[in-house]
Image 1: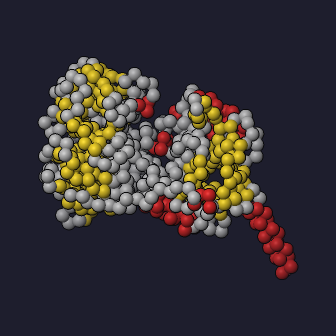
Image 2: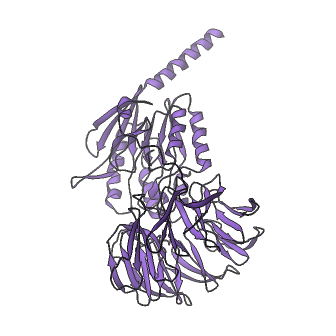
Image 3: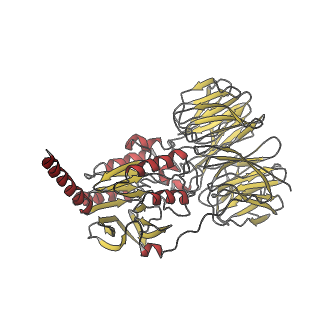
Length: 612
């Protein structure tokens, strides 16, 4: 019997050595940006024909499969990718999570996972995971404790072979907890990390971990567009990287050693993240949650309410420092809970809209007629106004009954509507700003910037209204002043790089906006042409976080994508800048004492105040 066991062992040992030494050939697709009927959609047939005509051990799709993560786009992309006859692994990118009308649920409908997936091929384990950002403009992050635990569990499974990391985001400073992730990957001997996001292929240094950035499907260089993907060959201790254009032979780009490589180590690496500091703020971290937080922190009667990525809505007593109750739903909570009298209203992705008793957390009413809530709501004139996929709703907050439903298409409002003078104004990801009569639910007017690019839509904004003026800032980087009664455009400028983040003075006279260059600007609401009262640079540089500005007692607060808060008085003087987190703030809320509450994506909530 022993000789037979020895023979079997020798056979398996020989096979293991062969599997380890046999080169693996991989096709890396990333940044496909497919929309039905666009050029990338049309060229995908040729891409798949080329991939199917050759041998690949694995085909990897590393995110940004679509433009906006809509169901139509995902279905179109899925129908292409399902034609690939090789083994596949697919994860998503920021274009599937930032603008998703379903809060990311449509991706799971097609690929049956949430972006976390693995594949074992030959002697390798490929571990893919997403980094968001989820339902708002921010940096990527994998701060959710469950996400990091999942990654580590997979790495533990792969210790007997080589491991390749796959994340749409490069593991550099654009990922808020990149040092934590890279440290984890290196601890388990990960060979390299594959990524996309920047479109142009390159070799990167992630704290000495090799980073391989794949080319986008369409790459425009020197006014010429090319279409293709990245081809990897894993042989022995090396990874050979080539660029593969459609209809052409592979063009070698570079080769590196796995795990550590002198060429990689000689490349620039992002510095260590800046350490937190309080500035002139009095600051207290009140909540540190195990899950990510995407909602505002709502505070009333010394109780704090919020939702998290685990689908939990929590009530926390500020004085006793104890949770009063927790209510769990089936999906992450993206829409901020809304306080109304003795209830807190929770809009969900798939459990309807639910009212909970503020003290006990018990269900008061539930309306299952409507779902897919990813934006904010507002109580005005004792009614709740909130948008969902394709509609704006007026709801009786005491019963949950829908008073009217204004259906406008298949897009969704992601920001918060504003109600004034019997009118509700809101933007959607269909390129339009709408004004609807609060009584009848009938459209009064709609405005568009004239662009057909939905990514320039006023979909994630809060319209600022004072008197008969509406002011908005959208991703098209214009400030637009509109007549509330007619929808007539009064003026529109692209003077500074503004994007979505705005505020309004307590007297309604001044409009505030954050620029993408770390500035705050003040503009009179009633001016008939663009006029700057002042511009203040708070010194944190490039920023694209959505977080609205908040105003309290003569101080304007704004937040950055990397956990910073700035306080500027209404004359434009910077009072303080502090850093309290590594991730973006979701929202700034002022309590009844005029003090600030800030929730950060990484799962913390801070209570801040400042002496003027």
